[in-house]
Structure formats: C-alpha cells, structure tokens
Image 1 (cartoon, chains in turn orange, yellow):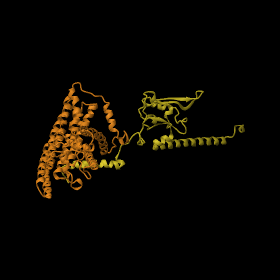
Image 2 (cartoon, helix red, strand yellow):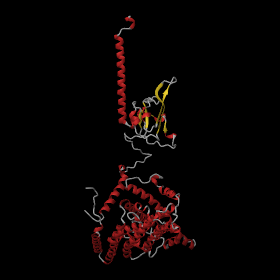
Image 3 (tube, chains in turn green, brown):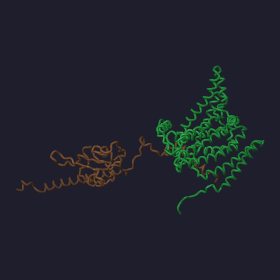
Image 4 (spheres, one colour):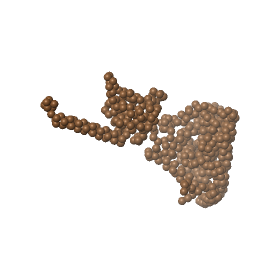
Length: 387
Length: 196
C-alpha cells in the first residue's frame, strides 16, 4: 500500500491527499478483483485445451475462434441453471459456504507482489498470512459438506479437512526454510532477496539445494491444499459423486469451482514468490518499464506454475486415502524438517562450495534414508494376467 | 535404472509427448469434427433401402413385382403397380413407400429382389422433425442413380453391373439365336403359297 500510495502521491502532487489515499485503497482491490478472476476464466479454458492435447484431442474449439469464448458460454450456462437447495439442508450454512470459499483465495493475493513495490499490503507477516488464510478454505468446505445433509458431501468434507490439515504442516515447514534463508516474513522482502546475481535469475531460491527440495514440497503441498489432482480426494467424482459440492448447483457450484481455482492459483503465486523469485527476472527493476517487465515475469511464472498443475492433473492418478496420509506424515514432513536443517548448514558454512556440497549431500542422504524406510509403501511393478 | 518416482516421471514424459506431438502430427488427433469432416463409410455399412435406376428416374429397375413387400419382416414396404389407361400393367411402381421408422435394416428385400433393383444405402443423416409422415420415404426420395450406387459401394456395384451385363448379353444372344433360328426355319420351309 505504502509504495502505491507514494507513487500516486508523487505523480498527482496537486490533488487532495484523501483522494490519493482512497485511490491507493481502490486500485489494488480493482486489480485483484479484475485480473485474477480473468486469469481464472482463462485457466478453465486453457486447462480444458491442454488436457485435451494431453489426451490427443482438440479441446473446446466451437465457441469463438479456437474456443476463446468458452468461459463466457460456461458462465452463461451455469447462471441459467436452477439453484437447488435440499429440503433438509441447513439453509443458512448451505448458502454461506460457497460465499466463504471464494474469500480466502482472493485474500492471499493481497500479499503476493506482482512488481517492485506493487503489493496490495506489504504485511510484515506476509508468508504467515498467506499460508494461514489459504487454509481457511477447509472451514468453508466443511460447512458445505455438513450443511448439505448428504453422506457423500460429508465424506468429501471430512476428507478435505483431513487433507488440508495434514498437508498444511509440510507446506509450512517448506516455507520456513525460505523464511530462515531470507530472514523475514514479508513477501516483498523475500522477493527482493532473490534479486541480483546472474540476470536476476541465479539467486532464485529454487536454484539452491534446499530451495529445490522446498519447491517440490511446496508444490506438492499446494496441490493438496487446493484439492487438485492427484490430491482431489475430497471431490473424487468416481467415489463420492462430487464430494462436498454434490448438493450444489447453478451459481453456487460455479463459486466452488472459482474458489478452488483461485486458491490453486494463489498457492501457485505464493510458490512463485517464495521459490521462483517472484517478479525477479532479466530486465525487471524500478521505474515504469522495469515494473512492466517485472509484472510480465511474475505472470509468466504464474502461468508456468498453472501449466505445471494442469500437466500433473493430466498425468497422475488419484492417491488412496491411506497413501495420502502416509505420504504427508512419513515422507513430506520428515523431508521438510531435514530441509530446515539444510538451510542452517547453508547459512553457517562459509565457503559457498562447501555449503553446496554439505547441503546437497545431507539432503540426498536423507532422501535415500526416507525412501528406504518407506520402501514397503512403494508399490512393486505388477503384471495382471491369468496364468 | 530404477529410482523412486520413476513411474511418475515416465508418465509426465508420455503426456508431454502427447501434448507437443498433437500440435505437430495430425494423425495423433483421432477426432473427426463431424459436421465439417466425415469418414467414408465402409462398403458393407448399411442404413435403409433405396431404388436403383439406370438412365433416368422414370425408368427404375423395379418392376413392382412386390416380392420385397411380401418378404419384408416388419412390413414397411408398400407398392402400387403402375397401369396404363386400359388397366394393363406397366411393370413399374406407381407408388413405392418405405417407412424408415419401421424398417429394421435387415437387407432381406435386397436379397430377394430378382432385378437388382433395391439396394441398401449408407446415408445416415435421415433424422427429421416430424414423427410420422416425414419418416415415410416416397418414390422420389427412394430413387437414386446407379452412379450413386457405384460411388457408395464400388465392389458390389461392379459385381451387379457385370451380372446384369452378362444377363443382358445372354438375353441378346438368345434373342439373336431365336431370330436366326426363325430365319433358318423360314428359309428351310418354302413359302405357303409356293407349296400349294
């Protein structure tokens, strides 16, 4: 806020101060409400196209050129659908859940910087805020499942809560590594720490041994928290009909979709901020041109993360519930804890090459130990045939 | 080489290959975008019967013999033979209706037809808005040229053409033989007048 305020204050020096203040409030709000839902609409189309290509099909290509108007058609269709509320449902909670689920997704964008100084609120506890608010969706999911009075909804909601709570732990632990390395919780400062180096790229945290591990952990955790494939157990269509949104139709259903996608994109945005250098890249810096290039870098990285999510969704099968929990508590959490120690090594070992060797060795050894310990959970290759 | 997560990485490689490959190799995309693109129907595919004519639609091969009408299991064929003013049969149908909502596409009419006149079509776009009269195919709808038949079923049409040609030649030969025999007979036997 401060930086946008300062920018406006300097640019429009002769307008009343309160106007600048109001504008500094409204611009980030308009940005978040305008840009991210637009990206959500685009993502639904790109996802369907990309999934189609992954399966050697054309995706939607009927509405407009190359199907670009498909999101519009989808939105219109879903608006015209009847809104059905079950007779025995808890009406108020049933209504409130889809409203609440969009909120955390949008709130996270407050602390995601898109360009130098361009962050809605530069909170001193930015990372904590993002992770805490991101998990709030579990409450809305459980409200939806409970209020529907449907066993499939409730099962989906129970799964959602269990999953989000479990995966929150390794995700936060992976984030702690970054917080330790950067020495701050402010997202803007974390991004600034990743600048410099060769072409503004070499200092991204993902190019550190602990950063790479943290990145993988964070992506997995992010997928699980936003209930995306392969962690889409809460809404597993083949098992639970639709999970927590079984009893929702029309625009409320659309809100669930939107909340889910916004949360997924928010997690992608936080991942970009923490590990991929945020808006840092060749050419990004202060000034108008630098800011625009920085914004381009941020949104390209965001698009890359979204594409990675789609790629994973098109490839990997869904986990079983016990595999899901075992994976979180027996593999991800120990690895995240080990990773924190690795950041300690990185920080205190002075010659950089030595730090590289020790950190990498430490992580590789622990990775091998963990895979060895969990060998019984790794499935053997089996051939199914009658003898 | 075996490593943890090998299957996951290999899966990602497969989908990436599909994703990129589908933009560069058209044969990867098996979708036929129907109203714009169609597949040539196979020779043996069949939908509903139609009537073949040789030169013009007013000279169908059909002689209105009504064998198909009798043999049709669901009785979907209705034929009226054309007659001239004196009531003499003209050996062609005046009315030939097939109700395709009743037809079960069994091809029995084709098998019993002695004149190679009724054949199975492969036109599958027969849906109509009306429920009753629209689905009754009248004589003008049913008549299609032999060229059309050759086009949709080349192999069978060639067989039928060869058979009809052979029959026509045999008939012509027989006729010629009969004419020759008559001429010979006429030559052998002296005129009646000269005998007496």
